Image 1: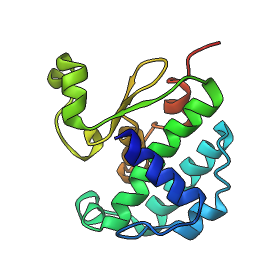
Image 2: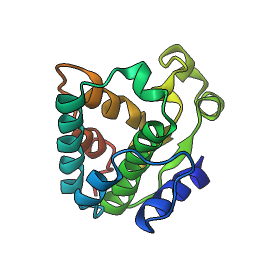
Image 3: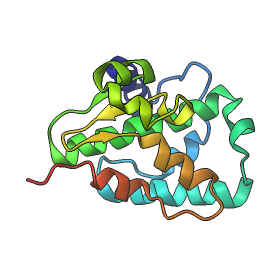
Length: 156
């Protein structure tokens, strides 16, 4: 999963093709994703704009590979910011790998889209797609991509 994360980030930063496409690529480019915590505020804003303008349905949205790529890229980007701002490394895990690494998590986390990519940050175990999908699909949400990432930055 670490290789997959790097592939997504490299493709985005190098403006390469994403197999299956990348939804909202122009908006992502305009969001100035520069590896800072402030860039996560811009992701929160982008997700709010998409939610308000398109009112996406979770299941229908996930039916398109380009939309899934968009969400996965945002998750991997959150890990990139956590690493850049806080140091240390993020270890990316599939759901199956997460259960091997932390067997007790099976009692707390069902297998679903949000848990298809998880990670261990320098601070704790993290499910970045949870805050991303909550921000995008929940009518009322208190979830913030930035706040979620900040909780995973180990204090210096």
